[in-house]
Image (cartoon, rainbow, N blue to C red):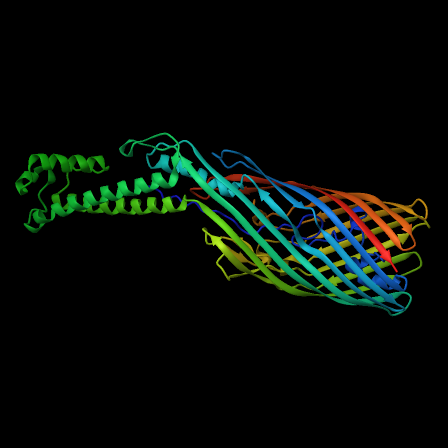
Amino acid sequence: MRKVFIFLLFSAIAFNVKAGGIVTNTNQSASFTRMAARDASVGVDATYFNPAGLTQLKNGFHVSLSNQYITQTRTIKTTFPGLNQSEFEGSVLAPIFPSVYAVYKKDKFAFSLGFNPIGGGGSALYEDGLPSFEMLVAGLPPSLNAAGIPTSKYSYETEFEGKSVYYGIQAGVSYEINEMLSVSLGLRYVTINNSYVGYLRNIEINPTFPALNYTGNMVKAPKFFTDLSAYLGAVSGQLSATSSSLQPILDGGGGNVPLANGTLAGLTPTQVATLQGTIAGLGGDPTNMTIAQAQGFFAGASQQFAANSAAMAANATATGDKKVDASQSGSGIVPIIGVNLKFDRLNIGMKYEHKASIKVKNATKLDDVGLYPDGAEVPSDMPGMFSIGAAFDATDKLKLSAGFHTYFDKGSEYGKRLNNEYVKNDMVIDKNLWEAAFGIEYALNEKWLLSLGYLRTTTGVMDKYQSDLSHSLSTNSIGGGLRFQLNENVGINLGAMNTMYIENTREFAANPPMPAYSETYNRKAFTLGFGVDLSF
């Protein structure tokens, strides 16, 4: 019988919940949700978006407090044959997504602090698992059918939840060289915390195997495979004993006697008939066999049944309940440099963040599948990124903004697996991800400002990067909202953003025993942002 492996594929999932790169979040203020082109910001959120622009704040203390409520739905459709369902859905929720900035501006200097979820920030729950979980369970019936054991159904229970957050704490100093040019230098300390909890249990099948009284009813797969292993082991022992029983005849020189004439070598007619019938029942042809050849046949069949027995014992273990409870943590440092150019009605901001080479270390409580060896380290870099933006005061009331960001994914390692080995990103990423943002703000009066923004994200991953566990999709995001200036010292930002993902389909070639099939990935996300800016 063909050996069946059931392997629960809990693995790292990218959880970044909205705008940004594959692992990086750039939706780092409530102002962003209402107007996505913040790369030339000179407000308090410039601490993240345009740190060199902080020199344009008034002297004094400035604080920005924001939170975003983010929901995301992930849908994976598959054409893999024989599954109980063809569509799987996971939900991601980030009810607390804070951004906190503080700036002290004094003449030509601005000193800033910031805290935000620079990556991740959500938890993904798949109540029905993923296609990769079910595919291998679904392989049980066809494998048993191929072995002559009629089986038509399977069932199982599964759930998987992964959580991931990369917290960033940054500090920087900005300096105004002259009225036109400002520069900044900063550092961000990034801490990564991931957790994976899930199970695959209660696998059942409906085999028909009368010799063991299995009649097509649903039964626990480990119990069936344990019984089948014992049965095959017993048959192996019987065949081995039969082979051994013929050894005296060979020792006496009767090995070349045709089995059909075995009575000449001391066998009884009943023994000859039983031996011939057994050989035929096992698919052999006893017609022209000698007794020596018959002994070799029984010895070989015994070894084959023993191997099948071991395979079924392995299947019993593989189809047993599997649980994972593991976490990962790590940290790194990101140097940040910025430049701001101020003209009459035009402001230009530029920022470069260096790559942080990070490895997360496993802390494993339970791992029945061997994917999270306790203490092992996994690459989980934060990529370098570059942003440039411009804000133009078209009139006293109307401001137009634009921005561009690119993330240097190819030069990083995100812990991506191919053939069960970690690979560098240039093996699975063809082009660096980039974003283009556009925004418009209109001041109704001194207190009320309305805004609208658009963000286009274009991923550069190769087809082989995409999987149900981890995939990257291009997006279109539209956001809008308002700013209410309560007084000279207090401003309130309200925004909402809808992110529309561009569906992607990957074709998987046949890889026996796995058939050819396709998977289609899609998501949708919605964000509400609220923030308060304070000046003293």
